[in-house]
Image 1 (tube, rainbow, N blue to C red):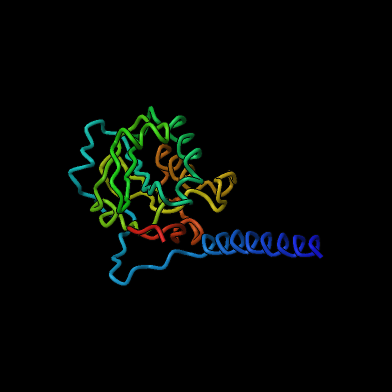
Image 2 (spheres, rainbow, N blue to C red):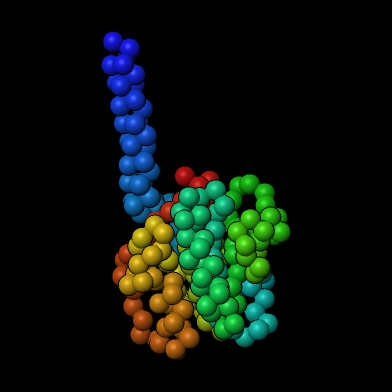
Length: 196
């Protein structure tokens, strides 16, 4: 009798754990709900913000990030690889969007990022970002070239759908006819600012 009770308890426990994994996987596969007051920002729009301060004349890559967002944490290695590969030709910055308080040093140290960390929530509105993680790529004149997802896979392992990387290559090769589908442009991840 005791063995049967332990067996059923273990089955119940594993079922609950399995359900939680399934539920979280389902939630993060659904698009992030668009906020009621959302104003879309079209490709080609000039993005003006004092925090950008583009002195280098390079394209700017903004990584919108929430340290509490599982999706943001899933793609951090992919983002680091983009910085390593394109960092000499593109000005990378992280825009932290969280109701919690973080410092530049804490983000740089925790995620091994030695690039500027910004805390300007107005950048999200200016770029049309309402979830994390999101990639925004601006050309040298600060016009919006790409705003969207990094990849269709959670860990950013599919090179065919590496949207942020495709956008980087396209901008650096001066492609003006680059078109992305809804998988790249719909927001998936954690809502702002509460990471739900």
